[in-house]
Image (cartoon, rainbow, N blue to C red; front, side, top):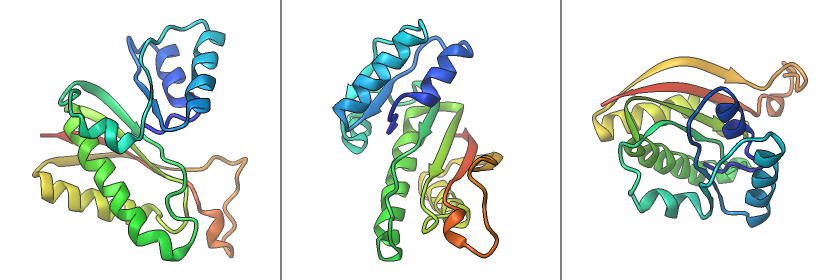
Length: 168
C-alpha cells in the first residue's frame, strides 16, 4: 500500500512471491512501478491507481494476503498533524489486518518523527484491542546507516517500522 516506485513489492517478487498487488494514489507512481517491474524482468498484472483507504474499504481481499506492507508518505509533516496522522495509520492497520490471512505479516511504516515507534506501537495495541486479534512483534526497524540518526536532532529519527505477525 502506497507503493511509490514499487520497491517493497519488487523485492518480494525477486525473493519468490507469486504475486504482488501494488496500490498508490499517484498514477505516475504506478507507471514507475510498472517500469521497474519490467526492468527487473518480473511480472505483475495487479497495479492499482487508487486511494489506499478506498482500495481497502472494498474488502474483496478479506483474509487473502500473506503479507501487507503499509508505507504511506508522511502523514504528519508538523506536530499539529500528528493526531490526524495517527487516525489514518489506525485505519490503515485495521483494514490491512482484515485483508491479511491468519498468521500473515504486516510491515507497518511511518516516515515522520511526529509519529514514531512509540506511537506506532500504541496504534498496534489499540487495533489489537478493537479487532480482538493478537500481533506478534517480529522486528523493529529504522532508517539505514546512510540516513544517520543524530542524538540531538529528534527529526533525524524519521523512519520507523514494525514487522508484525497477525494471529486472528
